[in-house]
Image (cartoon, rainbow, N blue to C red):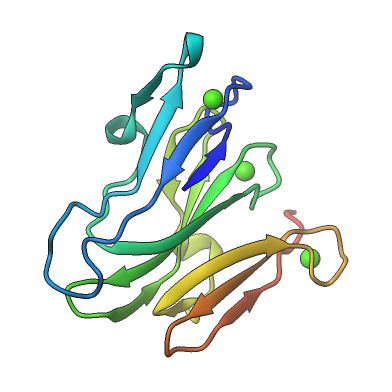
Length: 150
Ligand SMILES: [Ca+2]
Ligand SMILES: [Ca+2]
Ligand SMILES: [Ca+2]
């Protein structure tokens, strides 16, 4: 679960990702969800209009400003369940108002696939760009170095 301002109104929102089950049968909807904070601290589930639909399960998610445009984007470590199969890590770009679009194919290398597990963000090579580490369960862990946008 993540708490960050997705919508750009300086109120913290809540995003979370889900597994349908612990590698067993389909049990619950694994849709990643976004709860938007309104006035007086009330949260509304705005997943439908704001988030891409997903049937994959997600072990972990993280937020970072991946495209350097000042808003927080979203990374999901996706796994196919039932089964326990590798999938590409997903990247969702924020339009600045908290509407997310799946931009995986444009921004992540093909090799960013696996049974992805926990994720962490930090500038590991000291170039000022955030980098992304993706753990793997029985598959290769990945380190993706951020590049400055042109
Ligand atoms: Ca907000
Ligand atoms: Ca951004
Ligand atoms: Ca870096």
